[in-house]
Image (cartoon, rainbow, N blue to C red):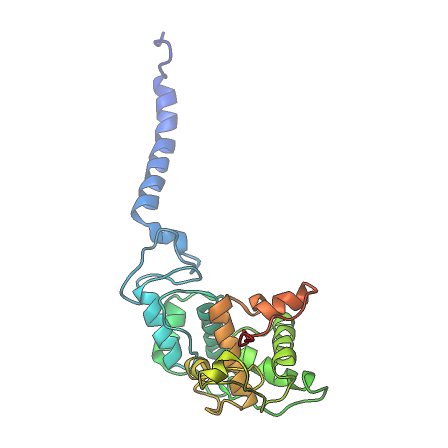
Length: 263
């Protein structure tokens, strides 16, 4: 009779294969953390790297490899702020690039997306690699810019009906739909760099956030919209989070750019 709590030989033989299998699985999970990222998404165990390509990159990650990705995106015609942070702006650029190269648009940068970016610029036949026209469509002074806004948001990988409507809100309250509008009374004007164009963008912001595929004229509708939206994504995290847009959608008054204090 076996001792109390001890197992018979037959019981031990039955449990050994199970224990061995569990041990193997444990070794694999410890020794091969990359298996967790087999679907192409970043592994939660992946660490920041200075070498682009050592890990799959995605939203929320940071590091020197993210900075190099941003430099590569900008070089290929998908400009982003080069800050080493994989935020909403970089996500939009990655999706726009994937769409332009004809890849799966998932926002993750693995071997396939990185390989396409390293190979060269996307085919010119793809809509995302084309220049947006600044020709207005039908509608009032604001809604006539809807086709231009759609095209620009397509370039940025941000085209949704909600985002289109949000950009039109900004245009309506900032310029009234006048592409030649200029604000000569705010603090920017006092500093010699007045807000201009449909999105009321100052020159410094336009130069930093414009697309090299569009006009270098700050009053050009498509170019002005691109720079304004690109900046807004970088500054506020998303188009929907622009203060003026949030205020209008909350049933409040529009929040304009900061004005010069009255004396």
